[in-house]
Amino acid sequence: MNTVELSNRIYPDITRTPEDYEAMYPKRKLPEGAKVTRLGPSPTGFIHLGNLYGAFVDERLAHQSEGVFYLRIEDTDDKRYVENAVETIISSLAFFGIQFDEGVTAHGDMGDYGDYTQSHRGEIYRCYAKKLIAEGKAYPCFLSEEEISEIREKQEELKIAPGIYGEWSRYRDWETDEVLQKEVAERLERGDDFVIRLKSSGVPNAAGDDIRRTKVVDAIRGELDVPENFQDIVIIKTTGIPTYHFAHAVDDHLMRTTHVVRGEEWLPSLPIHVELFDKLGFELPTYCHTAQLMKIGEDGNKRKLSKRKDPELSLDYYRSQGYHPAAVREYLLTILNSNYEEWRMANPDADIDEFAFTTEKMSNSGALFDLNKLNDVSKDTLLRIPATELAEWLHSWSQEFAPEYEYVFRDMDLLTQILDLGREDRKPRKDLIYARQIMTFIGYFFDESFEIEDEYPEEAAADRKNILQAYLDSYDHNDDQENWFNKIREIAVDQGYAAKPKDYKKNPEEYKGHVGHVSTVIRIALMGRSQSPDVWTIQQIMGENKVRARIEAELNR
Image (cartoon, rainbow, N blue to C red; front, top):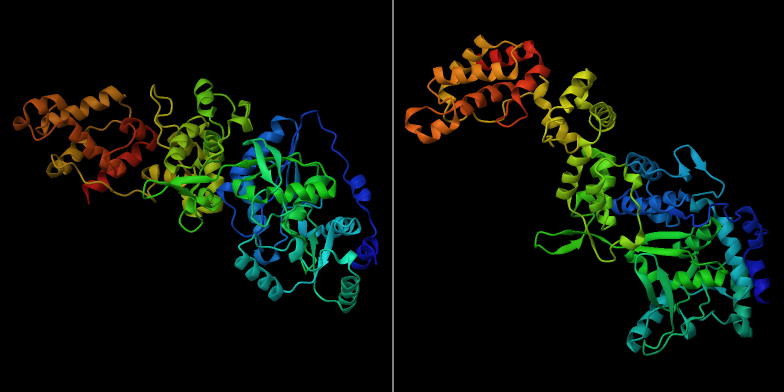
C-alpha cells in the first residue's frame, strides 16, 4: 500500500480535488494593494474587548485599501461551543459599528467564499488532508492517550522537547516498514481510532538548540526570527474534525486572506503555520500579531486584562453600560496608533475614517487599556454627536438594555433640549459619558427619577423654607437670566446673606452666608443636587409648572 492508496482508503468518499476548490474559490478581483482580512471568533459565549480590538484593525486595513473584511466562525472545538453564541458575536460587533463585507450574518451567509462556518466545511478539510497523505506529508497515527503519556514521561526524563515527532512517532515512517504497513492496514480495517498528523520536515536537536530557523515579516513587529517546526502536529482529530491550525490554513488560503490579525499569544504557533502553508503549497499571508491588552493593577504594575477579574474585558459590559460605539472606536484608535491623538487634535471635526491607520504605528508591547481614559474620550466624542442623534441612540439602547427608562423618551424634543444643555457654551460642558451615566445625570428632569440627593448647605439649612417661599413668591418664568439672578440676590440680602461671596469672605461675622449658599438651596430643591448645569437654563427646559411644583413639594416636605 502506497501513500495514494492509503489516502483513498482513509477518504474514499472524497472525490473533489484541491484543483476543484481552487476553481470554486478563485483569486479575488480587487484593486492592487487591497487587503483581505477576517475576524475568526470561536462561539464560546464570551466575546471580549480583544475581539473588538482585532476587528477594528481588520476593518481599517481592509476598507482603507478597498479590500474585503469578512466574519468567519471558527467552531472546530465543539467542546467549547455555547448555544446562541454566534448570535451574540454578530449583535455585539454590530453594536460597535463593525461592518463586514462578507461572512456569517444573522440571516445566513453573505459572499461567494463561504460556507463561512468551519464546522460546515468538513469535506474541504478532508480533501486537503487526503492530498497531504497522498504526497507523504501526513499520516494516520493510532497512538492511544496512554501511549502518548508514556512517551512524554520518557521525554521528560531525557530532558528533551515533549511531543510526537521523529523517532517518537511510531507510525511516522509506516511506508518504509512492512510490519507497520500491515498494522496500519489492519487497524484501518478494524475501524480503530486515529488522528491525522503532519509529517514535519523539521529536524529536532536533542539538546534543544541549533534548530533551523527562518525569517517571517510581521506587519507590526517587523522581521521575526522563527524556529523551524519539528512537531508532527495533529491536523485532523479522531472525530474527523480539523484542528484550528489546519482549518485556518486551508480557509485563509481559499478565502484569499492576505492579512491575519491576531494576538501575540499566537506567536508560538507561527512555526507550525509556516510549515503548514508550505506543505499545502499555499502562499503565507501577512501576519499582524497585536500587543496584548494590559491594565494597571492594584499593585501599580501592568497586567493582562482578565476574564475573571475585569468585567470591562467583556463587550457585554460596554453594551449594557451604553458606551456609544463612536466613543469606543475613538478610544481604541488612541491605543492602536500612536499618532492618532495628535491627528485628532489637528482635526477635531474630521470623520474618524479620514485617519490613515497603519500597522507600523501599532505597539508591539502591551497596549495599556484605561477605563478612565475611555470615559474622557467618550465625553469629547459625545460632544460632537448632534443631540437629536444622541437621543435616538439612547432610545434604542434603552429598549434593548434598560427598558425601565422608558419615561425618558416620551418627549424626544424635551430630551434633545436636555442633552444639548451647555454644549454650545463658550467652554462646552462635558457631562455625558455613557448611557447609564447619562440616565442618572439627567434624572432630575423627570419626576419618576427625581430625588433630593445632597444636603443643604450648612450656612442656609435653617432658612431653607424661608428662602424657597421667597423664591416662589418672586418667580417669573419670563425673567431673563440677569433679572432672575438679581431676584435671588435680593432674597439673599433680605435673609441676612452677603450679596457677593467676597463680601462674606471679608466679613464672615456680619452674614449668615452668601448668595451662593442661597442659590444652592434653590438648586437642590429643583435638581436634588448641589452641582448641576445652569439653573436658569434648566428651568426654561423644565417649564414653569414643574419649577413651581418642585419648590412647593420641598416647602411641604
